[in-house]
Each structure stands twice: as C-alpha cells, then as structure tokens.
Length: 115
Image (cartoon, rainbow, N blue to C red; front, side):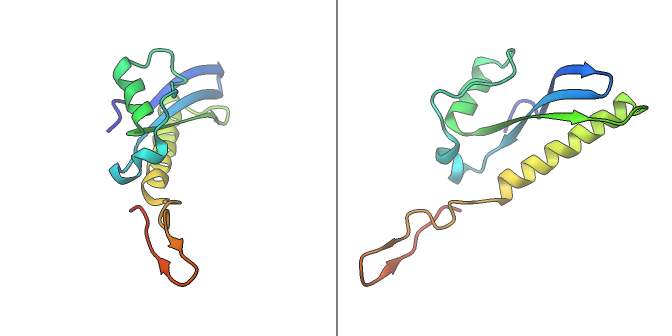
C-alpha cells in the first residue's frame, strides 16, 4: 500500500495543479510494474517510497488538473481524490497480463496468465 495517494507538485496558477498519484499494485502483477531504475516525480519521496516503486508494489502517475475559475481548494482536492480513485481502480481492474505465458506448441495451446 502506498504511503500517500495524491501529492500536489505545483500550482502553476490559481486554476492548474500538477500532481502525482500513487496506487497499490496487486501482488501477482508487481513484477510487471517493477523497474530497478524507477524514481518518483516527487523530489521528497522517501527511500521506502522509491523502493516500493522499484519493486512494482506502487504505480505512479503524474498529471495536471485544471479547474474552473471560482473552484475552491476543497473542490480541487475532491477532484484530485476522485482522480486517484479512478487511477487505483484502473490499476486494480485492468490486467493486460491475463493471458501472459500462454503458449502453442504447434498442436495444443497451454493456457497461462496472471491474475
């Protein structure tokens, strides 16, 4: 589980936020997310945060949120929370490796995959 979920990096103007999202990666898929060279866009990520990213335990996504004039900080935060939830739901639900390792030997298919 990531230590944090949403990190605001910058507020370019009163209506634009640049952010980082961290999502928990299902255990069976962590090897696909693993990257020994991974680092975070957030300069204050701890050594533990970086290790979790490198091990594939946590997925990171950066983005920009533009809000309409008059949007309160609380409303912007709520939008960022919803954006995080959507990211977490996608990391949990979308599995491009569901058939990973399935093979055909010329006669028979042997099914495999990662949950």
